[in-house]
Amino acid sequence: QVQLVESGGGLVQPGGSLRLSCVGSKFPDRFSTYSMIWYRQAPGKERELVARISIIGSTDYAYSVEGRFTISRDNAKKTVYLQMNSLKPEDTAVYYCKASYFYRAGNEYWGQGTRVTVAS
Image (cartoon, rainbow, N blue to C red; front, side):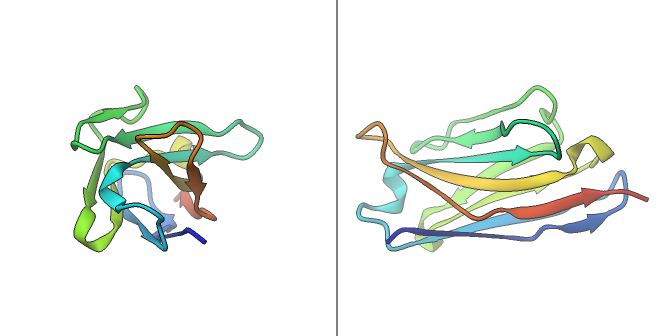
């Protein structure tokens, strides 16, 4: 059974930085064949896409995080990262990673999430 485990969340002051990690295991296919996506869900709000990295390494971001967050991946370590800089209180949320198999729609896996709180 595929497992995705996020880590790196915590409490940080506005303007600070965090790096989230999402480590995958037990994929039925090579990790490199999965697009990896970070989502977040703030209290009382719907889950939203934050950043995405394709199987060839192309990236895109939500407008609200463009220029502050960077998504990257290390296929050898089966890990995707989200570097978050210049954090704002509105970045407070539970952050989830998702793996989406490129060659077959619907083959998707979610992690359990890691909480990020931006407050002074």
